[in-house]
Image 1: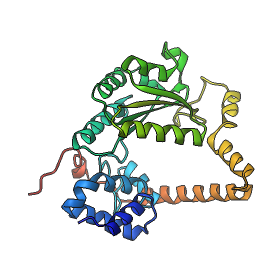
Image 2: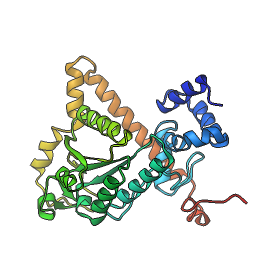
Image 3: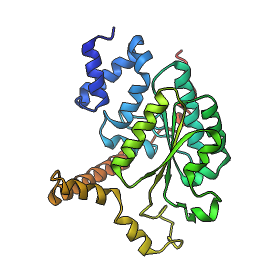
Image 4: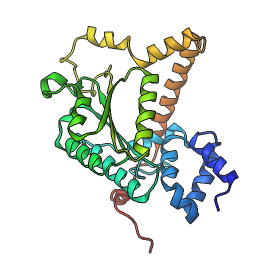
Length: 292
């Protein structure tokens, strides 16, 4: 039975307002209660990934290490990443189809770079999502370089959001460096998808300030270009606005930076010291497991 008190607690769980132990207890209840499980099964996985557990849970999961609360590759919406460009778009459309068939208000949000927009899978998925009016958000992080290849050298149409017109999909270009602009655009897109009006493509025009990987010498761009974009970075622009509004001081900002750095160090240390995932578990959480 889902009463008002429980609904309020579930709302607090989504908002990250519950203490960690109570959040874990409520998530266990969701798994064990059939009525709750039908309505909140995906909530459990999403909260585990994003809100209810400390961030030290993420690095072990990404490094194939074990943690008491998470297991590598567990869940439908934890972290779908793939080496194949545009592979996550396929998964997102599949998940969105599941949500539509189940009649839920959930949606799938897929993040990918502009390089994926040149792949056939991207266009096939856009077509199907539009045809079936699936609740999926295609969020393209256009940082101008697909690894080391400039956008203009790889795609004839560099206006990524314009590609959606071929499929009748709603689309918009957004300043990906503006926190408020992104929040507003995504909120509007989510409302559109949840209303059953189909998918939305948002081109988030941003920039990668660091190398693509530790092996990237960044010979394809000038340092001056990087510094110019750094001044437009969301940390710089957001904190400048907050300071101007009297909502943050420079001391506040520096304290947050120190806290973030310390948190990352703790997470990396925790992941490094965690137990390796057993080899016999490598194929788990790939297919459904039937209880014996």
